[in-house]
Length: 319
Image 1: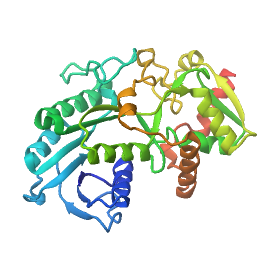
Image 2 (image 1 turned 90 degrees about the vertical axis):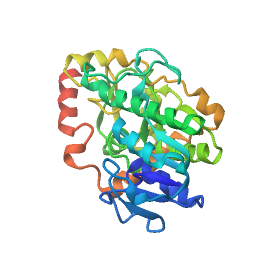
Image 3 (image 1 turned 60 degrees about the vertical axis):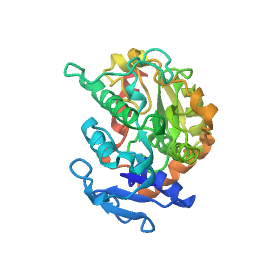
């Protein structure tokens, strides 16, 4: 197995799982992020944005592209590898969907990259263009994995880790929106296991890869019960948060107040479930994420999902 990238979050978790299953793994990356990882795997140093010649004329059963964001870079990889890989698995994103306001499955309309596209849609449009390149080149041998929000240990964002850590701190905890609001996310280890299952099962096609939709309040209740039952939840409505100028796209971690994105946490994953996608218990993800977050000492000051000072300001002004 060839992994393009392989040392950050999903890539790291995927390589760990692949090695544990006994796969022979080659990493191709620039050697800048955590180069001390995976001494038992082969690492080929190179920059895929300019040149993949360091891979020579070798062949692999499968390549997993966990770090493809720019169409021209993905096209270069597809062209260079050609028929020397049996399968090409591209990790895309649910951001490719043009309509985030209504529930979508894999057949929904995708964004089209163009000069007049608003900045917040560029990421999704680029990923959609990358998908087309891979599908055009490999057909049934292409696997397109569209994760939603990924959580779990080594999460480089502070969207999910914020909550168990915040409940652990205790006191008055600002909870955004309504308890019935939809939430949808998936443990990084479940995404990695699904990718490996697609490869070993020679399964191609496009799959929305995220968790089952659950009420936001259920997630908060699980965090409180597991971490600190004595914390004091304080509910603040979406309307109040928006009026206070909070960024509608996760100005409070995991919260989405943008009405144009009302279905982003209700994505249809029935195709992947029917093909074998599985999810671990939420309590396991919460506990393992908190353990990792505690061991690292929490996020850097500038990377915290919501600072204590900002939370206190919002609580003071809105409750």
